[in-house]
Amino acid sequence: MDSQDRARLVAGRGLVGNADQGGRRQVTIMSRERWDEVMLSVGAALDCSARRANLVVSGLDLARTAERVLRIGNCRLRIVGETRPCEHMEGAAPGLQAAMRERWGGGVHGEVLDGGEILVGDSVRWET
Figure 1 (cartoon, rainbow, N blue to C red):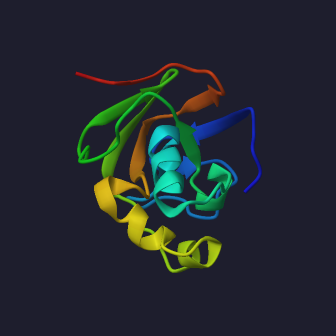
Figure 2 (tube, rainbow, N blue to C red):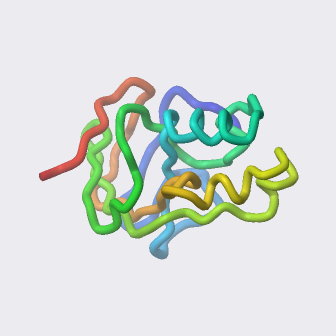
């Protein structure tokens, strides 16, 4: 995964340039804070890019947020569900896959409702 300063989201499709387009898993999102907790629990210091999520957010708890709507800048995403960690996580650090299974540590996936450009530093908040 290559870090980017900006990205474009397309409603009903997902992230421009991403291999997976359409469907219910258009964008994967993880919490920086939750990743740090998982790293501490397994005694590792991997960069969050090891998770291979499309977006990394900070300041939000993503656990049990299915059906909530997340606003990133001017874009809106409906959270569909938890992103379960695959066996590749275990190859990155022993115990990582199991640790990520707790409290939605693998993040979430969702559908793009309103597309547009997003930038690093954009506000991220739940719609009420």
